[in-house]
Length: 395
Image (tube, rainbow, N blue to C red):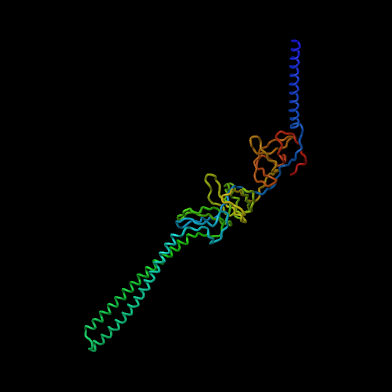
């Protein structure tokens, strides 16, 4: 029985060895087959020949949507917000009421001024009547003084009578002066109250805050119940017609940018809108060596947000040089950009420096020579892979 068990163990060991050998053989066959498939069997691929040509030259830069002149609507008086009549996204018209502030205290003050004006008006009318009476009394005194002087000359009255007439005349003249001064004081008080009334009306009108122009509300700070002081911001308004994108362009290429050049603006939403270069700054950023360029929208975007990110592409002419298909670009394991050059039936990774590009072609500034054959589509291929052209190379 022990001998039987020993034979069984030996048989199992032998079976394990055969199984291991079979697995190793299968693995070697698989690796060898894969290697043959990759390096032994030539893959048909489309190829392209690097040739001279031109692509549209574009200056590309990131930017943000801005307004040329954003308008902040602020409170002019200290009060409390009692009504807000606009919100973010609303389009408002010139003179449209936006906010109403509590005007009860100001109305009460205006009522006091009105009462003072009414009382002063009555006093002024009385002073004016008193002046008229004093002037009439003065004329009577003058007439009597002249008559008494004539009568004295004729011997009908005494000197005492003329002295009394002269005294009455002086008193009447003094009465006119007093009445005139009183009226002048009342009129001065009236002017002061009138100025105070105009000021009260102006302050009172500032409790009704209106839009200064046609615009879109992009920010609302006013809330019912909040308190205000002179200068407290309530709304931020933007005229959509003044929108543009502020982008930054490197000093090395900004010389090709000119006002009026056609541009395209891609918003973060994916929407692409036409525009034109409106302004180029004349001061460079000392740290980044970039200049700010403003690109205006050709038409008002339906939906926008201030400070929204965008990408600007400015058409600045053409770039000439060696061209290869855009799909020929790839990267190696280290992240270097390059193409797969075809030589002796195999691919070879060739690092390149690129320039401008369009939807189909890219300009190669360094790394290729005219006439070099490259894989037209690098996706799915690798370096040192056997290939053959599927079609005749196209220039």
